[in-house]
Length: 199
Image 1 (cartoon, rainbow, N blue to C red):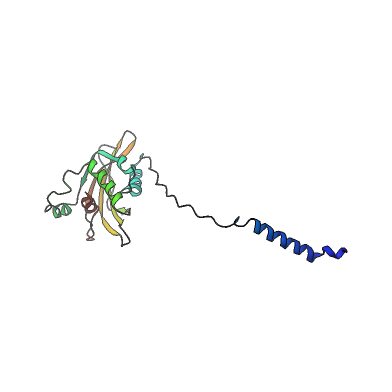
Image 2 (image 1 turned 30 degrees about the vertical axis):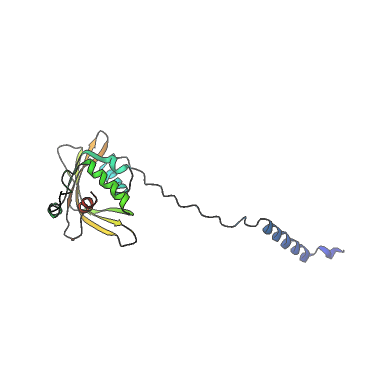
């Protein structure tokens, strides 16, 4: 064999053979693996140093089955339904709004988490100026809200109204002390209606 035995063509042929050998020997080396199922971590519970933190926790945790929502509902919590919502349910054996306290509020939120696919809470804007009392640790805020409740593959049910919410600072953390629900004229069911239906 002369000098021409290892010319450019021979070197190229050897490289191709080496490449094919490596690819053949490492069959499956670069093939995609079965993807791992996505892990969705729950949103963290915000430290409640301000009323805004409580509001954020409500958005992220109401009806989601976490303990975060329950942890921030005040021991003296009061829920007041829209007067018309309450009247509409007077014909039931027991008006579901009667005796609504912290335990009922937490139980209803947990029931929602186990009976619907998902829920989304939105505080859209305010409809009145924040008010405070002579107690600087208590603050009432006024929000337009809407909720979307997803069940099965159907279109989500929309609940809408006005929330009058009182936040109370106990030691360092704020809690949700009161929630007064109001219809907003849209004709849509209120958050109170959702609560009553799940009690």
